[in-house]
Image 1 (cartoon, rainbow, N blue to C red):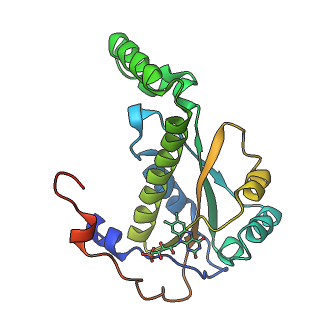
Image 2 (image 1 turned 90 degrees about the horizontal axis):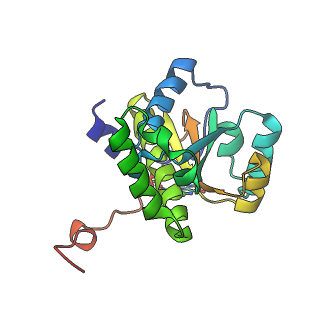
Length: 200
Ligand SMILES: Cc1cc2nc3c(=O)[nH]c(=O)nc-3n(C[C@H](O)[C@H](O)[C@H](O)COP(=O)(O)O)c2cc1C
């Protein structure tokens, strides 16, 4: 499946075949797509907590107002972001660059993010979201179904995954084989409402 088809074919699945399991190759492909997502200054804030424990799955379902995907889907990935990734040994984000380039970039990114907590948080969520989109498009191209989710109590989910203080949850992503057709599309906005020329 070509990329544009995967993007337009992707739909949110809400009910999954609980007997279907992704194989290791599929998981590796999705992880490869996740790790290639673009991030500002290549900071790679995204972290994936893969939930395999049945008790944790059940606790997530409770936290998510009993949404069945959390126990039915083959994979449940809590996509998080590290808000402080910009200052945690940033040299490693440019370890393949020459020393001079690395020094310049690390200096720039440190200046850009320091003392800006809102931007630090935005960036962690932005990177986690790009990561999730890469996974969803890749999964669609492999014939799998996905569901992005934010319908949950974030504090409860944080407790289940032992979320560090300096991380945020971007969303939960469920992946597997859907057993029901998706709802009819809600109705996309017309392009002239979404796209503006030069300014609002
Ligand atoms: C950030 C985000 C959170 C969402 N949370 C939920 C959710 O908790 N439960 C659910 O069933 N669908 C959830 N959805 C799916 C949306 O309802 C769905 O993307 C939207 O209706 C468009 O449909 P489509 O994804 O099939 O194109 C979420 C989607 C996004 C992007």
